[in-house]
Length: 212
Image 1 (cartoon, helix red, strand yellow):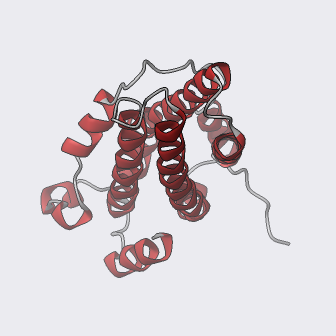
Image 2: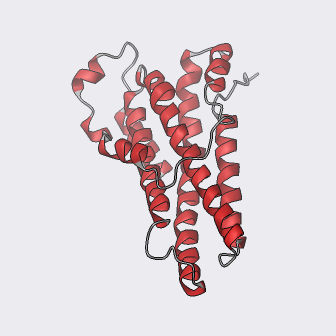
């Protein structure tokens, strides 16, 4: 009988997916000419961006170091896609200060179309990544950690206490992008420090193709 293992990121990914879909729906139905509704929508989008920035910080602090002990090439794949998400987040934050952020109805309508287009792209890309990432991450963690250890890891990814990020705060996303290490540049020195089996690079390439 196949053993059912704990999925440490399942709840977190469900929270992220639900947040994305709710925000996307609110963007579609918002009245961009109503000041109160417009202000609430901006706050909601800023909160969504803040959640993803905080999750990226948790990836860097907790998940990536753990995975790197066993599969550094997988970490390179996840970082490449994290960089892609941060680009989207930066674009969304900057939308609030561009020329479309105006009070007249015509410019608000143009802004709403641009916002909806960008956010829909972000949602589609992120949901596809989340679905593929969970499988790849579980494949590694299940080999080396017990369910008790995975439960402790899952608790560290709790997103419930996050607060709204400051307006147009792109510093963290910019830092991730500027310090990104593409998979092709993983040094042989880092690979020699691994204490477990070598990661099959052709598998990593195949996984990246599936995730994109």
